[in-house]
Length: 515
Image (tube, rainbow, N blue to C red; front, top):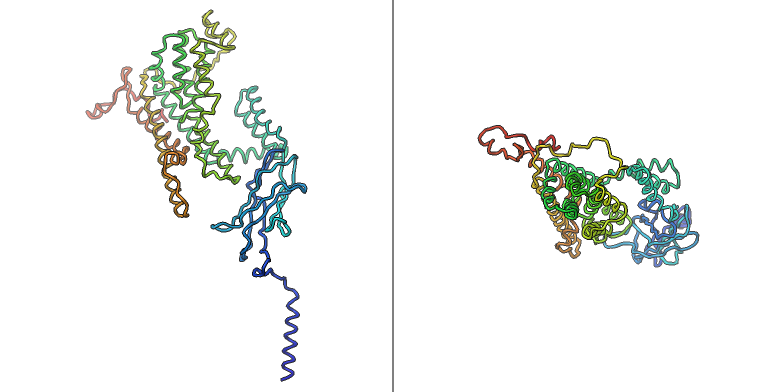
């Protein structure tokens, strides 16, 4: 009996002694003051690859919390960014909210007065003294501020010198990539091709822009070939009786036909040239009136072939802000932001006002003054040293010689596309607002109001422009197909078809021509 107790004591002593060897002690989560393990931290891949010297910049990172750990009593996590021993920013944030752990962190803006590769250290801790911390390091590429001005300057200079916009834009993109890729020309070339160009084409908002512009351009071409645009011009040309009235009509038509700058230039340049020549208005003045009206009005009109591109650029910036941690849910949609920027479009507005005042007070400026004096005093509409293009005029979009120029063939599609765009924005905005209300109610939050601001703010402008231009294009095709030209006038074929007679004349525009 005594021996068995002795053996039990020996075995127990060996077990107790061996428990201190070969085993890693784990923190006691229930012990007071014992902190839980810190989460692993690393910088997010959404950070911008390049920053600018002396310009505010921010960084984002992600947390990876260990599982099966109690964080009772620990509700805050502290972070600080350090550069060369200097604390840039130090902040605190919540570890979790009612939805669970907060997995992302973000710094406020900070400034670094240096260029080249800069090592930025991130430290996180449960206490503001950072006695126990985890850290990560990011090497950030910094460039001088003046360098960022070079890409747009290169684009402008080369566009003026070479007269080639697309080549100049590519060169500007390449030089921007050259800066981003640490002045490595080969890496810049590859990045331009496989990243910037591909992502621009493949982006959803950019795809909408391409599709909408393509559809609306086809619609405008069909309207032009049907004679509808020229019919609208003929209606207003009846009011052109003097030099001032001719110029006012050109200005007014440029404002009325706002949906596309190219179509506007084609329309006014071809239809008003005969009238302006009759009033001895120089070709330089005519070109200025047409060009300085069509582009400004197309850039500020609520519906135009430009708006898809402009709204797409605004949407891209909203997405960039969201990627950088900015809450854009309270901001209006890209289309509403576009409308709000119209009063700040100083060049288009001032150019239109300048033209109106110049015509009203009969004052010319610079080379236009000399050209107008030459035309009025010498009867020369074109300067003696002017270079006249010899290539044949592209007549594929001009109406046939026997086509009646009916104003409704241009007016109806334009009004229809405007009505459809606005209706679609209202419908998509209402559906999105109702969906947001349901989500807010499910989360126990106050639902957003269903008012005009919310509806237009949440409307899908890109989709609405695509819907409207596509449907109106089909409508215009059918509209032109069922109009027939007979002896210089429009005849509807339905009476002939009911009587089982052949169609009168030829279709105003066949489906093949429209396509």
